[in-house]
Amino acid sequence: MKTTNTAAGAWSIRRLHAVDDAQIDALADVLIDCVEGGASVSFMLPLTRDRARAFWRRVADGVARGERALLVAEDAQGICGTVQLILDLPENQPHRADLAKMLVRRRVRRQGLGAALMRAAEAMALECGRTLLVLDAVTGGDAERLYGHLGWQRVGAIPRYALMPDGEPCSTTYFYRDLAPHTGAQKA
Ligand SMILES: CC(C)(COP(=O)(O)OP(=O)(O)OC[C@H]1O[C@@H](n2cnc3c(N)ncnc32)[C@H](O)[C@@H]1OP(=O)(O)O)[C@@H](O)C(=O)NCCC(=O)NCCS
Image (cartoon, rainbow, N blue to C red; front, side, top):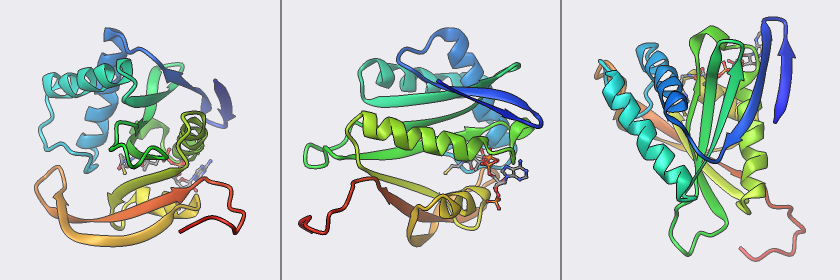
């Protein structure tokens, strides 16, 4: 667990190996807050608590089966951020994970939590034996800018890939991050 103090407060980031009902509720709150704030993260408005809870119950099942690795950030008011790695990939990609559902509550944004979650997710990937990470983000959004600053490699954008929560089509940009130490002797 890593604790960080900022001018605005303090948070700690930890991995959940099991997700209880209270944590599912808190994660549903984070998801709803992000979608109501206009984030394109799989869901359309209005996002009911039932749908948000159902999503996190499926994530909790995946965590229990070892198919997902989940991080949460907590401050004095509870869970304020999260990110996860999807580990359940085809057998010819044992070194890879997809990074998904990077979510920070609006009340704690722009204090470095997104960057801290990303670094923690990269460290967790290495602990899981995964050295190649892939993600996608809305083109031109806050997340795309952050990932570029954090050293993720931009691959390209796909127009009309998804919808914003209000129904507006949006383009998605794919990124990857190679965490493997390169010796120059690796095969392509
Ligand atoms: C994308 C997201 C996770 C970023 O979270 P965050 O906690 O605000 O991220 P950070 O604080 O690390 O960085 C955000 C910006 O604040 C800046 N920042 C960090 N600490 C700061 C501080 N103390 N003072 C001022 N600015 C600061 C960063 O440099 C960064 O700047 P940039 O916009 O120029 O890149 C958040 O906006 C979010 O949850 N969005 C909705 C959900 C979403 O779209 N998720 C992505 C799915 S791919």
